[in-house]
Length: 120
Image 1 (cartoon, one colour):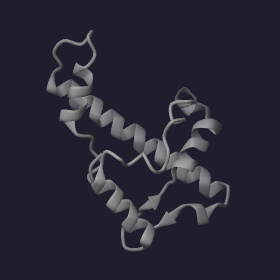
Image 2 (image 1 turned 120 degrees about the vertical axis):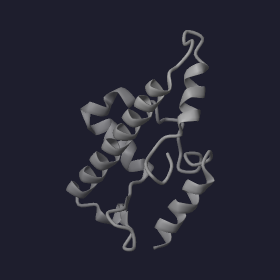
Image 3 (image 1 turned 120 degrees about the horizontal axis):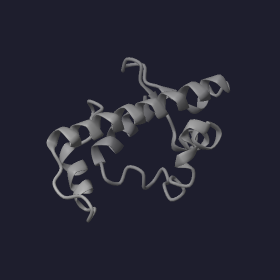
Image 4 (image 1 turned 135 degrees about the horizontal axis):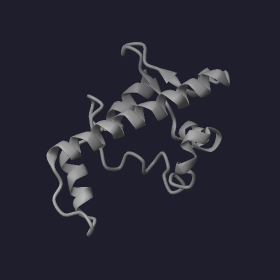
């Protein structure tokens, strides 16, 4: 996901075309998948943030004072949300191999932004 909250269309299309059952994919279909994915990730992050604030764990999520409405949600918080919120139950086990260290390995720019947020 880039800084605008959008998924890269070319990577989504490439991922879809890896499936042998998928022939051609229209650009509109890929754009729809990207938009839905962004909405889902946004909903998961917001739900995780709200749940952590409800549990009075403000120290575990950091807010960047310079950026408007930016809260850093940790991987541990997301994993807990997946386990405790039934609407995300279908993700149970999908994050087992994901760690803080390897979760940003594909996007160096995201890691730099995350470090900058943590430092503030």
